[in-house]
Length: 80
Image 1: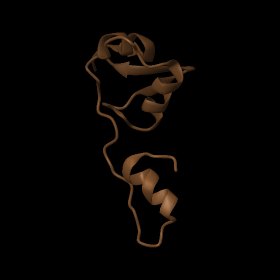
Image 2 (image 1 turned 90 degrees about the vertical axis):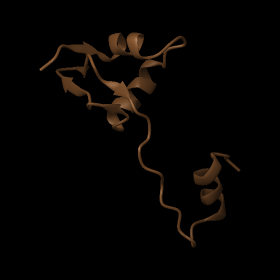
Image 3 (image 1 turned 135 degrees about the vertical axis):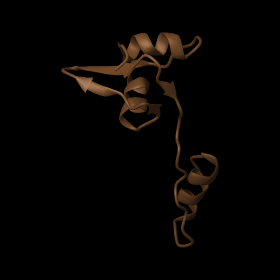
């Protein structure tokens, strides 16, 4: 197993400035947007030193009978 880094230390190497905030990094870790997936060791999230940010891998499923507002948000990200 390779060396692991804290989530903050990993972000310094992975992203150029501005680096995402701590809550955003936690969201990435919990949502599976980093591969290989981070793990929690005690109270601290640890990331493999070779891990990469992959972002969202699945698109939401949009059904015909979904609310039009929901469809618009899922399709282009607009709130209204």
